[in-house]
Image 1 (cartoon, rainbow, N blue to C red):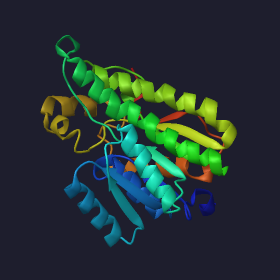
Image 2 (image 1 turned 45 degrees about the vertical axis):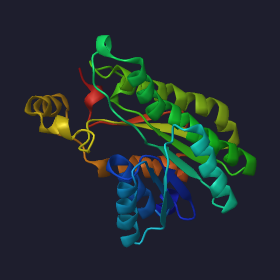
Image 3 (image 1 turned 60 degrees about the vertical axis):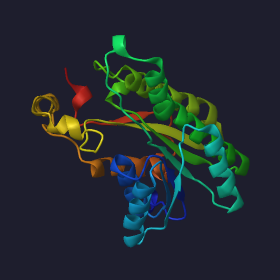
Length: 255
């Protein structure tokens, strides 16, 4: 049974993976046997993340680039091609948050959030899928959604639009790429204890609201997303396509 979830011999590219959930995904896939390629935009964070992974005996490498930059994404995959590195798994995790009421929202802020959270997933997945199709190898695309892929919350309209887009982009990928043995799915994390959410955790009122509103009665931990990521990356999910799996402590199951 364990071989069903094994990622030995596979290479996974995880965007936005120097900290938080992305780093947890990288650790989890590496523990399942994958070689990992991590990504970030700040050199110090990339260096620290690579050191941690390599000290754990992980076969890891990393690249600095903005994954919403089409030319940079294409240059990365061209470099990997030249080095005969085959990306079998993509986790589109890169994302940012921006909180402001829509009546005060600038177009530039709206566009920036959509570029990082949604357009980057399209660009990276497209580059990877083109190569998967060309070599007839199949592969796994995992996009990272959110509770806001399903429901909205005030003051985060760009994020909500982007994560709603992730849900249907994932279905579009499945509709077009399933014929090539590429499985495209998404994960929708609930409220997880990460750097991005630290200000919310430290807000006593918001923290109380999360704990009271979640059937599990607590925030999630990054490592609690690893099992779902490994499953969607492995042959165990070979007939699962176009789905979003919410890892939310039961949040969306209740009113």
